[in-house]
Image 1 (cartoon, rainbow, N blue to C red):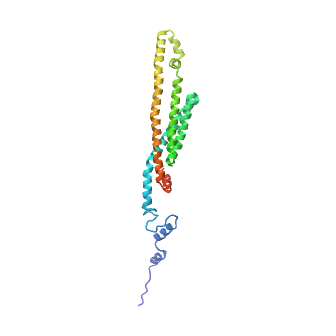
Image 2: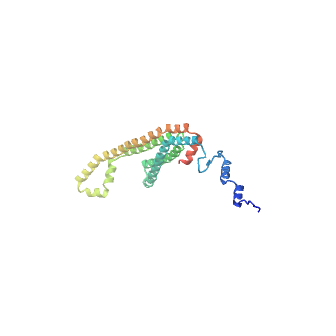
Image 3: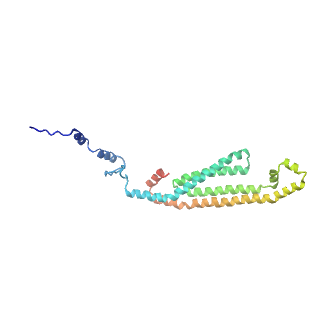
Length: 243
C-alpha cells in the first residue's frame, strides 16, 4: 500500500509567509535613523539609541534643572505682575493721575517683559538671565518712583478734607474745640503714616525685587554651562519634551 506524505496546508502558508517579526524589523531598518536590526531595536523592547546617548540626555536634564527652576519663577512673576496691572487699570481709567498711569503702565510693561524672559530662560538663551534681572530692577524703579511721588505730593489739608467731609465740618463748627483737636491729630500723625507706609513699601521692594534680580543674575552661569556642555541635538530634545 502506497503512502502519500501530505504537508499541512497551514504550515505551508506559514513557511511561505515567513516570520512577521522579521518583516517588522526590516521595515524599521528602512526607516531613517534606525540601523540596528537586533531584537527590540527601535521598538517596544528597547531604545532606538544607545546607552551613551541616553547618558548624555540624563546629564543634560540634571544641568537644566536650575535653568528650568528660574524659568518657572519668571513665569509666576510675570503672571502676578500682569494680573495686578490689569486689575488696577480700571481704577486708573476712572480716576486718572500721573502716578497711577505711570505705575500701572510700568507694571504691565514689566509683566510683558517678564513673560518674554520666561520664554528665553526656558530655551536657555544666553541673555535670559540678564533680561530677567534688569527687568526686576526696572520694576523696583517704578515702585520707588511711585512712592517718592506720593510722599512729595502729600498734603495734610487733603487728608483733612478726605477724613472730614464739608457737611460734618459744618456741624463741628458749633464745637470748635473738637474740630481743632481733630485737625491737630491729622497734622501730627498723618505724615508719619504716609511717609512710614511708603518708606516700608520701598524697603520691601528693595528686598524682594532686588533679591529676585540677584537670583536671576546668578542663573547666568547655569545657562552658560548648559549651552557649553550640551550637544545641540540633546537641547532640541529637552526643549520639545521637557516643557
